Image (cartoon, rainbow, N blue to C red; front, side, top):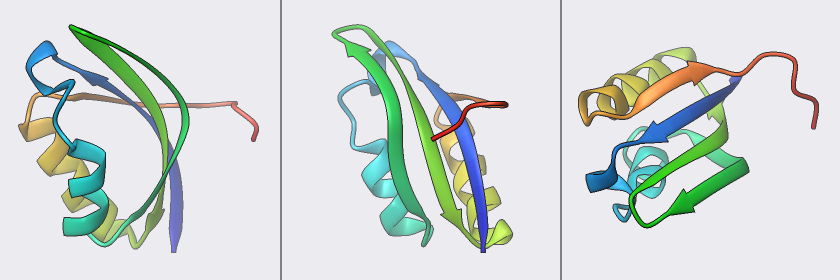
Length: 78
């Protein structure tokens, strides 16, 4: 199992969509929201993902294909 901490930045049209739920449900990864800032027309989430490297990579490919920007988060402690 692999654990990754990432920042997702959502475009306005996806702010109200259940992207994180679908990610965890469809790609067999456990998700934990560490930080978030969501308002009506934009949002970002720092998310921990646990799963196999393959499942995480497939999930991230799906997320980026939807138009969400994904960045690695370095140096954050829990």
